Length: 150
Image 1: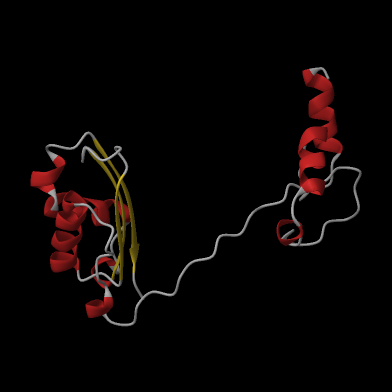
Image 2: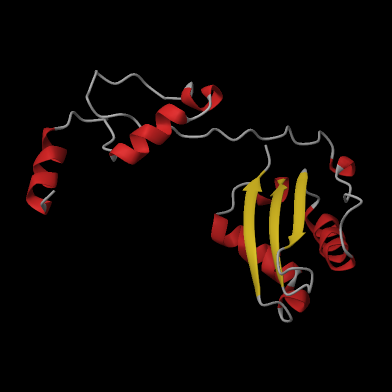
């Protein structure tokens, strides 16, 4: 399809519809029923199929900060990072994972803490970077996700 005809097709489609390829439409029909049922708001009938989005569930956070305990499977490096963050930020949810293959050069962190309340994401990340400054010096990288706890 020529670029100009694609543009015309997009302009002719009703607002709120998603344009998908035939392969994506087939994949959507072949998706398990628990995925097909999550469609979002109804859209007027269209020859184009909607892309199915997968919903991710989240666990309820622990009610007290003392409930956040390190899992048994953490390595020494992960456990060190976990304890340091727990001591400084008193999180309600904390996940630490070595994603470097076990050598300890890259970590993925998810921190949900009431201390982040009212701070921008950048300030939350700066706070974590200050706490882990000595550790981060020897890391290759870090994936950091933070959230203010209610």
